[in-house]
Image (cartoon, rainbow, N blue to C red; front, side, top):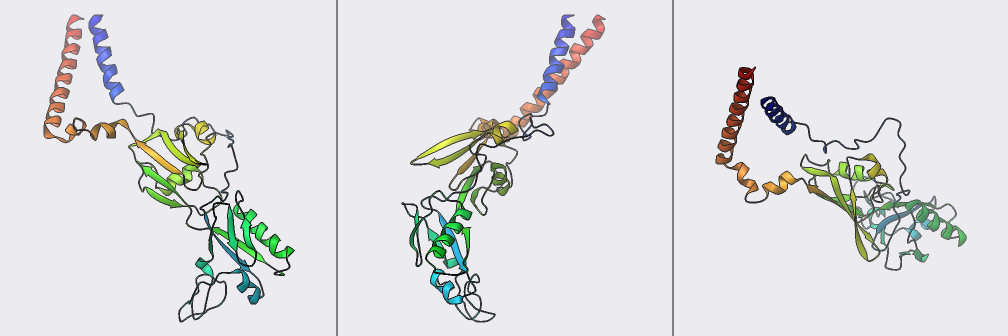
Length: 281
């Protein structure tokens, strides 16, 4: 009986060593037809230091020139004109030069209108604010305002395929989309402990997200990424061990020779136990 128990323990140990890791797959607790809710709408709202591009379109080119910043000489060839992008062709354009920075008071200095407070507003709300002010003052009869994000980013660091600054190009970006922009976590990334550092007022606040649990992802305050967020994917324990002097021993020939010898000894021991059990029976 004791010999049989020894064999069971050895076999169980071998099976445990070969089992599939449980912390690799995302959202393991998600079931079909499950409904998840998020804590907020996740829409980007402008704050001091943000940059945005604003352009006014109108049938009247004279009115357009009042509100759009000149982009400079567009060069020769093709066509030129007002407000059509990057100033292609022979003429001036507005395009990428019509960028505004939100100051510390949450305001932008817009042509003709002067200082306009847009702090806490979404992209669509800024469009409506500018349009309303122009119409109220009878400055343009048919204004169409277009607002887009300019040089607004978040950072992805750590164990991902392509770390670095990632641009904010739309009103909402989820943490899963943000990690996809970094081409996903690599196999050594710790999925159960992803940290997001967020600027809140004058402080940086860390949040932790477990990507293996859908409920944890969707209920997180950082499910939607904001401007200037820093997403850090921690390496797993294997990588941490290998980064040390003792951990790097796995790359030495002596390590593999020792491993082969230990494996051979284990196999010999198992064979001996099986032989003794059979002999006892």
